[in-house]
Image (cartoon, rainbow over all chains, first blue to last red; front, side, top):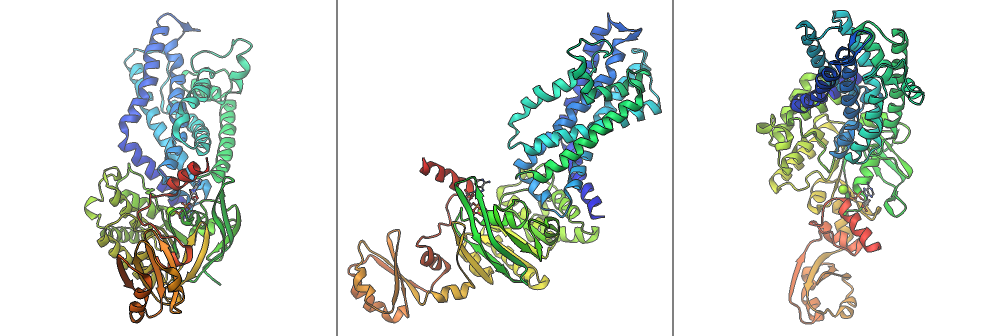
Length: 256
Length: 323
Ligand SMILES: Nc1ncnc2c1ncn2[C@@H]1O[C@H](COP(=O)(O)OP(=O)(O)O)[C@@H](O)[C@H]1O
Ligand SMILES: [Mg+2]
């Protein structure tokens, strides 16, 4: 009981922060929307893949981009909690480290999924108005997409938390962007099909867990994918479980 | 069994800074125990180890019967702490910070609301409870911090410099409340402070610590009594110390700043004789001993109450002098 309440407490805090910093969150979905409109619309005006409009093709990739950026950075922000000493208040509470970790993940997942819902609404508006053809929106496809993203978010927030818990100050943000978040995004097939890749690139793309999340989203929203859905879900689940494991350990070893 | 027992508790930062040096002490259940020492003495570090937030370099401690290294979770269930530095979330309101605390400590809802009102009143923040902490002044943050620490009434409460930077009136308020808590709830309270008056007023027993070591430990009353007399402070360019040392009621002569501090038995009856021996003086003052005098007596240094805050300033200075 105490543990559940503790998890709720941490979620409550993240949610309040989210409410007060709405503008920050809104600002962060501008970038995915631009990708969708400008890159998708621009390239889509002369490229289609096997009869599929490019703009529709990258929509799952754009969802993934929002989830990836938002959840990794949410996790890394724990270095801020450390800096303002708020983390001490949390760590001295009679709450298991696992619960603290879960509370943080749920906070990050809430933040991120709210952004995803907005993006899905944008995609739906485009589809419903006939400006975009190829996306299949149904209750099932939306829920499945959210579920796939949720599993991925758990792992991605964990990566952020692992990095953030080992950082001493918020200065390394730019490095994380360049060496982790961008590569995970660009080498995931979010922007291109992955069945005919150059030899140097294929192995990297195939070990990148984000690839499987995007592939699963394509299955849900476009009705076709490179791998079987079950494989996609299995890979991201294993990835997330491993990251949660490492993350809980990193939390226990964290220096204040 | 003591509610707190430390065994050779030691903390080193890097290779150079020995912040806490083989600390051995025992705290009895229900007492208000003080750690009194200047900035950089190792008080905060000691509390961080006792509250499981930093691992000791060697040695250990038992809190409420639980080992801080092997059973940190059980230790955390027995304690509460008011940190020296503000640790509330400035994006949340004062009320929300307190609610968060109540949830973290699994307080039943009604009790939580009752305590929140109670502590908000104590620290005089009722009117500002719905403002985000970002808008609070330094003193208000400090008070919120205190309110939060007092909310869940743990078995053992640690308070790191509880009234740091507060005005005299709020300090009196807080002291009264702490005393009440200890008495009515049989709470054990450990406070650290570098304010002599606070230590004197609040603590049943206290340890004077300097450079990570206990210098002396006793009740404030005994500590003062142990000096064996009153204190005469003499301001003069040069004191004829040899002549004074021959007087057997003069226990000790110490120089601090431009003043000489004499510990003298029955000072008022012997003042005339002493002044005969000193030669020409600028001024003289006589008082019964305070903890300041105790500190000076044992360490040869005066505690400066206005020295820069936090171990970091101290550390920066240490680093400079080393080079
Ligand atoms: N995180 C830290 N890293 C390195 N040195 C530290 C750290 N915290 C404290 N110190 C050093 O340890 C000593 C004791 O500091 P502290 O426990 O804060 O003393 P106090 O609370 O009595 O002022 C000081 O010399 C301080 O500079
Ligand atoms: Mg301190």
